[in-house]
Length: 311
Image (cartoon, rainbow, N blue to C red; front, side, top):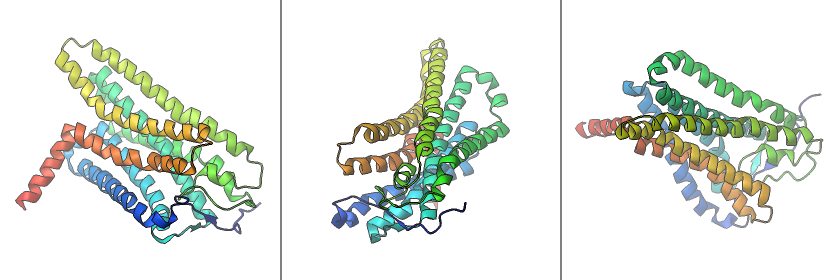
């Protein structure tokens, strides 16, 4: 059997009932998109150029920023195209590819947050072995493992979309393609596509969150054993940025899940808005959190501005 390449184009949806205001709605969206690109791009430049940031903690942060940049660039063209020019049509191939990247990168982000928790666990619980455990080679292996888990685990539910026939409505409920949206339009047995994502979420998001929680319990236990109050505060302060990013990510995941599962009677605009919050809020907040809470990055920012003022 060959992929179904003759399927009609899908139609993306912005904010139903607010089509006349799409140009106005585009202003905050464009502002957030540019902020995300500038914030994460600048963070990557700082980590690349500042040798004091060439440590495992910041390598993982660079992976997080790169993931946020990629997911933003994945959704931005269709969202802004719809809000600015009412470009609703998207080809099946482009739609499935966008869904693949969106979902894969979500799992990658969850995996990076787990890797960052592991980094903090090693740094606080076994500080003398930190450099021997988290070598550059080890960091690369962890990063590659996180990428492979995200991108390989999404192939089984995405590939069948190419073979399904679509005889229902071709109208999607967002300004970007999501697997759960597309599969509902298929005239085929979608049992596997319904069951597999539930198992995948349990083995990735849920398991990652559980391991992050356990690692912080062990970190807290170690920190409470430190005699000096000043040292305790210093150790915990290195975790604040990561904990904040974890909360931002998982609270939006839980919020989106609750809206999809229990918000059947909620207005459609609530579902749409929550999906945008999920895709835009963490990439927007992560650079801000690390810029505000991390002294090394603050020093890089001050150094950059001082160089410009001299010039």
